Length: 141
Image (cartoon, rainbow, N blue to C red; front, side):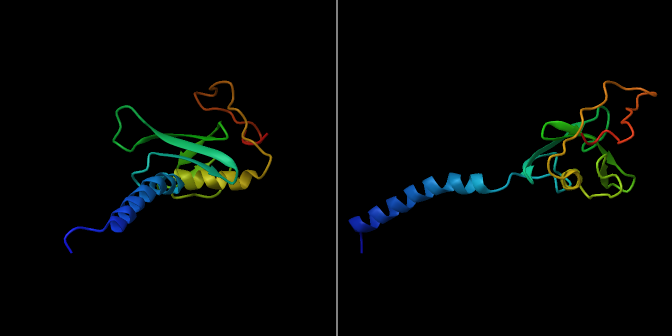
Protein backbone atom coordinates (compact mmCIF):
# COMPACT_ATOMS: atom_id res chain seq x y z
CA UNK A 1 0.00 0.00 0.00
CA UNK A 2 2.37 2.67 -1.16
CA UNK A 3 0.38 5.07 -3.28
CA UNK A 4 -3.34 5.84 -3.00
CA UNK A 5 -5.51 4.65 -5.85
CA UNK A 6 -6.97 7.07 -8.35
CA UNK A 7 -10.47 6.49 -6.93
CA UNK A 8 -9.32 7.46 -3.40
CA UNK A 9 -7.72 10.66 -4.70
CA UNK A 10 -10.92 11.56 -6.56
CA UNK A 11 -13.03 10.98 -3.45
CA UNK A 12 -10.69 13.12 -1.35
CA UNK A 13 -10.74 15.92 -3.91
CA UNK A 14 -14.55 15.73 -4.14
CA UNK A 15 -14.87 15.89 -0.34
CA UNK A 16 -12.67 19.01 -0.26
CA UNK A 17 -14.76 20.70 -2.95
CA UNK A 18 -18.00 19.88 -1.10
CA UNK A 19 -16.55 21.25 2.15
CA UNK A 20 -15.52 24.49 0.40
CA UNK A 21 -19.00 24.91 -1.08
CA UNK A 22 -20.93 24.03 2.08
CA UNK A 23 -18.80 25.95 4.62
CA UNK A 24 -19.97 29.47 3.63
CA UNK A 25 -23.60 28.35 3.63
CA UNK A 26 -23.27 26.89 7.12
CA UNK A 27 -21.42 29.99 8.37
CA UNK A 28 -24.07 32.32 6.95
CA UNK A 29 -26.87 30.34 8.58
CA UNK A 30 -25.36 30.74 12.05
CA UNK A 31 -26.57 33.71 14.09
CA UNK A 32 -24.21 36.63 14.48
CA UNK A 33 -22.79 37.42 17.93
CA UNK A 34 -25.41 38.97 20.21
CA UNK A 35 -25.31 41.37 23.11
CA UNK A 36 -26.57 38.70 25.49
CA UNK A 37 -23.26 38.41 27.26
CA UNK A 38 -21.40 41.01 29.26
CA UNK A 39 -18.95 41.64 26.41
CA UNK A 40 -21.68 42.24 23.79
CA UNK A 41 -21.59 45.73 22.36
CA UNK A 42 -24.05 45.43 19.48
CA UNK A 43 -26.88 43.43 17.98
CA UNK A 44 -28.62 43.41 14.63
CA UNK A 45 -31.40 40.93 13.94
CA UNK A 46 -34.92 40.43 12.71
CA UNK A 47 -37.23 39.60 15.60
CA UNK A 48 -40.89 38.81 14.95
CA UNK A 49 -40.67 40.45 11.55
CA UNK A 50 -39.08 43.66 12.85
CA UNK A 51 -35.51 44.82 12.35
CA UNK A 52 -33.92 45.54 15.71
CA UNK A 53 -30.47 47.07 16.01
CA UNK A 54 -28.48 48.28 18.93
CA UNK A 55 -24.97 49.48 19.64
CA UNK A 56 -23.20 50.62 22.76
CA UNK A 57 -21.84 54.11 22.21
CA UNK A 58 -18.97 54.68 24.62
CA UNK A 59 -19.23 57.71 26.88
CA UNK A 60 -16.24 60.02 26.98
CA UNK A 61 -14.21 59.76 30.18
CA UNK A 62 -15.96 56.64 31.45
CA UNK A 63 -14.78 53.09 31.96
CA UNK A 64 -14.80 50.60 29.11
CA UNK A 65 -18.28 49.10 28.77
CA UNK A 66 -19.98 52.23 30.10
CA UNK A 67 -21.96 54.27 27.66
CA UNK A 68 -25.36 54.69 26.13
CA UNK A 69 -27.20 52.15 24.01
CA UNK A 70 -28.50 53.47 20.70
CA UNK A 71 -31.36 51.11 19.77
CA UNK A 72 -33.77 51.18 16.84
CA UNK A 73 -36.82 49.12 15.91
CA UNK A 74 -37.54 49.30 12.17
CA UNK A 75 -35.25 52.34 12.02
CA UNK A 76 -37.04 54.28 14.75
CA UNK A 77 -35.27 54.98 18.06
CA UNK A 78 -36.19 53.06 21.19
CA UNK A 79 -35.05 54.64 24.45
CA UNK A 80 -33.53 52.17 26.93
CA UNK A 81 -32.67 52.97 30.51
CA UNK A 82 -30.35 51.19 32.91
CA UNK A 83 -31.75 50.50 36.35
CA UNK A 84 -29.69 50.70 39.53
CA UNK A 85 -29.59 46.89 39.75
CA UNK A 86 -27.98 46.66 36.29
CA UNK A 87 -31.09 45.52 34.41
CA UNK A 88 -32.70 47.34 31.49
CA UNK A 89 -36.14 48.72 30.68
CA UNK A 90 -37.61 50.51 27.67
CA UNK A 91 -40.13 53.29 27.26
CA UNK A 92 -42.52 50.77 25.70
CA UNK A 93 -42.35 48.22 28.51
CA UNK A 94 -41.25 50.25 31.51
CA UNK A 95 -42.83 48.04 34.17
CA UNK A 96 -40.51 45.08 33.67
CA UNK A 97 -36.73 44.76 33.80
CA UNK A 98 -34.56 42.67 31.49
CA UNK A 99 -30.99 41.41 31.87
CA UNK A 100 -29.66 42.82 28.58
CA UNK A 101 -30.48 45.59 26.12
CA UNK A 102 -31.33 42.91 23.54
CA UNK A 103 -33.86 41.29 25.89
CA UNK A 104 -35.42 44.70 26.65
CA UNK A 105 -35.68 45.46 22.93
CA UNK A 106 -37.30 42.11 22.17
CA UNK A 107 -39.80 42.69 25.01
CA UNK A 108 -40.65 46.10 23.53
CA UNK A 109 -41.37 44.44 20.18
CA UNK A 110 -43.56 41.87 21.94
CA UNK A 111 -45.47 44.67 23.69
CA UNK A 112 -45.97 46.79 20.57
CA UNK A 113 -47.86 44.18 18.63
CA UNK A 114 -48.34 44.00 14.86
CA UNK A 115 -48.89 47.18 12.91
CA UNK A 116 -47.72 49.53 15.68
CA UNK A 117 -44.59 51.61 15.27
CA UNK A 118 -42.49 53.72 17.55
CA UNK A 119 -43.06 57.46 17.32
CA UNK A 120 -40.30 59.76 16.21
CA UNK A 121 -38.62 61.46 19.16
CA UNK A 122 -39.78 64.88 20.31
CA UNK A 123 -38.27 67.77 18.31
CA UNK A 124 -35.83 68.79 21.02
CA UNK A 125 -34.92 68.78 24.68
CA UNK A 126 -37.10 70.76 27.06
CA UNK A 127 -37.41 70.97 30.83
CA UNK A 128 -33.70 71.11 31.57
CA UNK A 129 -32.61 68.60 28.93
CA UNK A 130 -35.24 65.91 29.48
CA UNK A 131 -37.43 65.04 26.55
CA UNK A 132 -41.17 65.22 27.07
CA UNK A 133 -42.72 62.11 25.65
CA UNK A 134 -46.37 63.15 25.92
CA UNK A 135 -49.28 61.49 27.66
CA UNK A 136 -48.77 58.21 25.81
CA UNK A 137 -45.03 58.35 26.55
CA UNK A 138 -44.35 58.80 22.83
CA UNK A 139 -43.93 55.12 22.14
CA UNK A 140 -46.72 54.21 19.77
CA UNK A 141 -48.28 55.75 16.74
